[in-house]
Structures are given as C-alpha cells and as structure tokens.
Length: 452
Ligand SMILES: O=C(O)CCC(=O)C(=O)O
Ligand SMILES: [Fe+2]
Image (cartoon, rainbow, N blue to C red):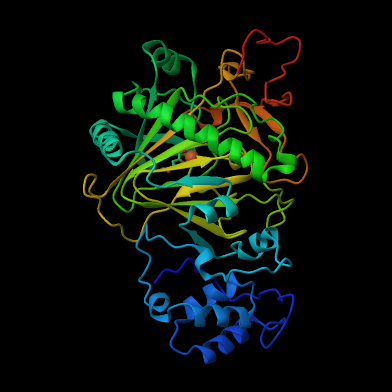
C-alpha cells in the first residue's frame, strides 16, 4: 500500500502540551504507544494520523476513537486519483498554539520521503501549485482529450544534449500557437534546449475553446494566492502585475506507465521571471512530483555546486539530488487544472515520474495528455534578448543551487545544449524592474514600446 507518506524513520516534534507519548520521544516509541492503544489499525495509518496531529499521541488516539476504524484501516493501495486529505486525520481544534504555519512545517516531506497529496487544500498549502478537480464540463474534457489524442499520434520525442550525449525525453510533445504568423516566428526565432522546434502547430478548435476558461481560472487562482499567501498580500517582486493571457500551449503525451519527464524547471527565457503556467491533465491519472531546490555551497565531494536551473524537457542530471528535501507527489486526475504559481519555476523542480502501474482511462486507454498553457511575453521575444558569441539568443536562468547570488537571473549561451555544437562562455546578469520587465543596458535594443 502506498499511503500518502512513505518515509524513513523520523523524529517528530513534541506537542505543546505533552501527555503520555506526547513529548520528545522518537517516532517509533510514539507509534508503539499508539499501536498498543489501537492494535487493529495498520502502522501506516497510525503514522499518518500521528503526523496529522503534530506527533501528539493522545490527540491522534482520540481522533482514531472518533473515526470509524474499519474505514481508515481498509484503505487500499495507492490507486491514483483516490481522494484523500490530510485534514481527515485532524481533529477539529481550537488549539491556537498550532498555527497553520507550524502545521505546514511539520507535515512537509523530509529527505528520502514522499508526501502524496490529493486534496486541493493540501496542494495549496504544501506546494507552489493549486489544483482544481473536475475543471471542465465532462463532455468538453472528453472532446479536448479525443482531439489531442488524434494530434498526439504524430507527436515526436524532444531530443537534446545532456553532457556529451544526445538523449530524448521519454514522452512525446508538440507546441501549439495561435496564428500562422506565430508558427513561422516560433520555427525561425525561438530556441529550446539550444535547438529550433520543427513541429509547431496551429491551435486546435478544442484547445482554443478551453483557453479562455483556463485563463479565467488561472487569473482567479493567482489573485487568491497573492491575497492569501504572499507576504503583505502583494504580488512577488518581478511578478507581472498584468492579467495572465496564454498565447501558446505545449501538449505532452505519455503513453503507458513508463513514459515520463525528468526533473526540471520550465524555461523562463520567453515567459520572464516569476512565470505562471496553467496545466490541464486529461486521460490516465499520473503523479506530478515537485521538490524544492535547496541552495548549497558545495556538493558532498566538496566541489562547487552547479549554479543554475536545468531547462524544460531535461532529465535528471548529476546536480540533482531529488531527495534533498523529500518530494511531494500531486495526483493529477483526468480533467484537472494545475496552476503553477509565480514561486514555482525559480524555487522548485518538477517531473512526471514513471508509474509502477496505471488505471486505464475509458477514452485514453493507457495515455495521458497534458497541456501547459503559457504566456509568451513580447518583451522576451528573442529579437530583444541578449545574444551570445555564437550569435543565438541567450537562455534565461536563475541561480538556484548556490547561496551566493541565490535568486539572481542571468543570460547565458544556449548552444551548449545543441547536439553537435560546443557553445560559448557568454554570461550576463539579467536585470528586471519590479514587474519583471527586462532592463537592458543602453547599448542594447530597448523594447520600450512593448507591453506585457
Ligand atoms: O505533464 C505534465 O504534467 C508536466 C509537463 C511539464 O512539466 C512540461 O511540459 O514542462
Ligand atoms: Fe515542466
């Protein structure tokens, strides 16, 4: 059984008012105590409940008495999409000593563990994302799914260079834009992993129909997040103050349990800093894993840690330690909208992990379709951004892994990812105004007349 937490042994913090087993005892001792009080309940369930009560054995025990043991202990193994909330384990409480902030801290996943989230409230609280289930009218979701499954028949794998090898991502994808002109521009001007896209398509009728619905929901979620979770109820520094208006969509297809996408942050080169992305899932439910990127000065061998995010479509690299702070798995069922908020790409990485097994979907079979609607900003058109000595537009990255200059953006050569090309050592710090508009130095072309 895959419970919402899989973890190594850990120690829980003492509860504010410690009773029997509510102090600083190791988790194993607390579990043994709880187990002796509730011998019929599975260990995993007991640990879940213990965590939901901040390690307080007496509260966990009371909660267990109040719940129907049969219901809890008969939970079956991790069928993806099974709706479960951390809150179901928590007693209603007037306890002002346990602030939401404190709970977030304690429920966070730890090194080597995965926190599995199903409930939208848990996703909003523990990750930089929000999720809306049953997002579209059921028939619209199926129409979109059918349309994109047909498109996906001719999708191809993305190929890129990792160290000295040319590798391809173990899933297929294509890029959809709104006009014929945009298709031409995409093919001519834009670089992804150092190469130009050859497969750029015109937005399909169903993708176009769903776009305004996604737009409205994402803007609503962004405003809600700003008001409820950001310091002072204000947008983040460098986050755009304008409404999010998607003008393109990457569509991914995962055929079968083994197709996946490796750990990465999405490229900010054309989205700008603090980008927001609206991601629709259709077909087979899969796990979307996220993990916070921790800055560090040296790796375990004492070498300087590499400094930048990897780009979209990348796979696990030597710089990645996916277990550094544990992982969070967000379950993405058919017809859900996941909003990746402004703090996501700079501070977190994400992936679609290969699945041990999947539940086939009545329309999609073993396939999952994912659409990421994106807002390509005019000011980040490659005609405006710095070019390196190879003569191609630079990639925008952010310092994620080093404490020095942590969170600073920079432009660098894109070509080192191009199969067959070496690239140059071009580097330039990127400057933005408070709203994330690029400030280029006086000698560069200043896109002053542009908005967005
Ligand atoms: O399939 C997904 O849900 C995520 C895809 C993704 O991360 C990407 O396209 O950058
Ligand atoms: Fe991504």
